[in-house]
Length: 230
View 1 (cartoon, rainbow, N blue to C red):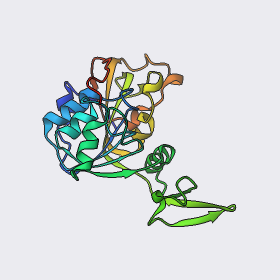
View 2: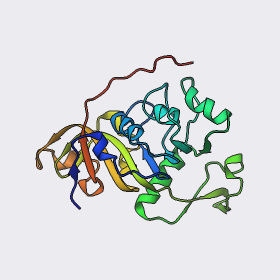
View 3: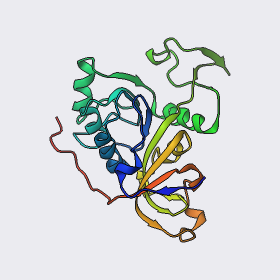
């Protein structure tokens, strides 16, 4: 597989289809692929299922995609915090669906999707509302819930640096869900602040090998704070 370098973020997401499942990296604003999300808004794909750690902050990034009315369902761990007013309004008015998944379980479901694991048992959520309708089994004297993998049609992630082969290096906590999401989607698009020649990145520092990355686009790093949080 050859990683292509897109001239613009718009080019990188041009073929995202209506109804796609989109894995979106980021832990709050850290590691959020803002340029790719903005391009997806301009591109116009709708009825999306978005898988992410949380349901957006303020009016930027994922929250802007929700505000544009392009998302049918969110699968996440933290749908509501002080600045998630866009999602909160949509959910309370019945305009968006929600599936809450504990954070560790979400990461493992995505990892399982990338690893080709059919399903796995997990003790988290057993005996709670999150386990309703799911198969449970006692293992070593403890109740476990059967969880199924999460896969995406597209993954939008952000990394710090890439080489022309698509090998990715992340910056600190901005790594978060990026590496597992890069293994679990049919098409993986990464925005990076710098693209260097093949061989210029020490192989020992590569976190996501280029074999997982379909497209790269260079984007300026943003330092964002959420304005108008309610």
